[in-house]
Image (cartoon, rainbow, N blue to C red; front, side):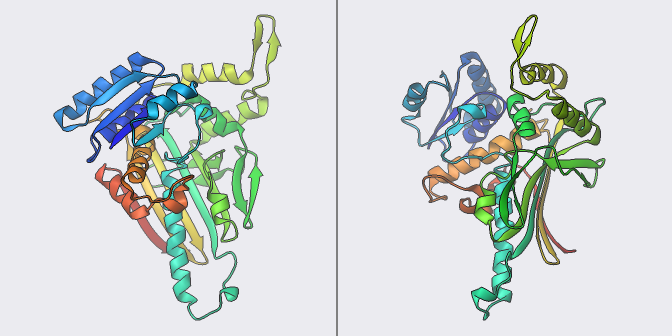
Length: 364
């Protein structure tokens, strides 16, 4: 298969890295408006894989030029967009970490509980089944520095525009089985996982993607919360309350600027870094006294030089695209990660790439 990646930043280059080493991939095209960045990434990938990897060709393209992008897509069996969210057109949307991997795993937990409940209620009429059948689907995800330092205790691990968007847009969740929108940065709760200091989990936008619609009526509560250390959460919540994420232009003596523009520049200046990172994810499905879960703790890979966020965001996207092109995902049109991606194939591919995801079940 011949694959195209649009965007040669952190996630795009990591996706191309994964594709080039995958069996069945003949060639990869890595496109970016900055041809030098695409060429640098292609050289890095070629050096890392040597003769064992598929060739990666760097080309220049403006993601905002739909005609040029459409022309570039011809001759490829699949294309992955790794550009900022405002350029994207959805085909198989939200194939990263969360939404993406988290959605696939959440869908698998729902199917497991659904199968268990079907067996336990065999012989009873469908009208007698409890509604909703699953009490809660809880997703906790965070990309953090391995060694957080004050005062920020955070390091940028993906697009600053995407990060701020998570902090300002409403979160879509299920409450009492119905889809509702709630304010971001709300309902903080303590989150604990072995080996790390206590964290704060809170609502941000986008993480649930299509899950509220997919599971409405079957799942009582469904949400995704972002993980941060407490001091960072307090900082972000304060900036939000003061209006530092607002896109409304403010007139100053020196000209016009929006608070969000200024905050973006400051985040890039103060929060950028290259220290090792860690990605933490826990997906929980609660049904009566039963809790099924998937847990992942992934760290920066010194051997490849790829951050954990690059591995856990770009590689799932690469895997889903390859499953589509190979026919392992038969559905065409809009694909929902939680419904259409086969979890067993997905987990197998993640394991092959060294991403360790642990399944567990317990009683409350």
